[in-house]
Amino acid sequence: MKSAAFHRVMTDEAAQHGRLADGFAGHGCTRHGAGACVSQDDPTIHTNTIEGDFSVFKRGMKGVYRRGGKKHLHRHVAGFDFRCNECEATDGERAAFALAGAKGKRPT
Image (cartoon, rainbow, N blue to C red; front, top):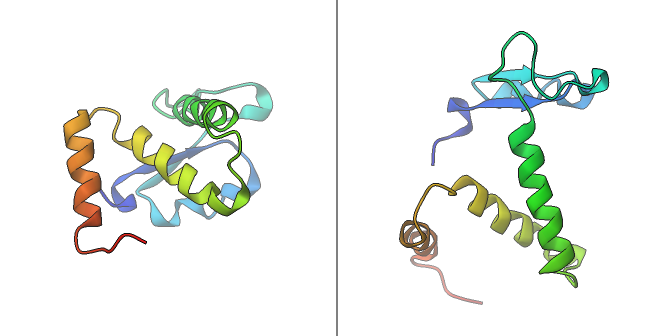
C-alpha cells in the first residue's frame, strides 16, 4: 500500500478539512453546500467514492454487525477500510496481505 504522501485527499468545503492536506500530495475540494459532488474546475475531484464506501459501511453496520458497539467500532471500520482499499485485488491476494500482517504476532 502506498503512503498518504502519494495520494490526494478530496473533501467538501467544511472548515475542519483545512489542515487535512498536510500529510497528502494534494487536497481537492467540492462545494456540497452549493449541491455539487464534483468540482467544476477539475472533474477528477469528487466525493462520490467516499460516499459510496460510507454507504456500504452503514449498510454493513445496520445489517451484519447490528450488535457492534463502540468498543469494537474501530475494528469494523478497519475491516471495511481494508476491503474498500483492496477492492481490485483477488481474494487470494487479500488473504495473503492480511496474513502477512499477522506474521510474528500471537493471537489473543
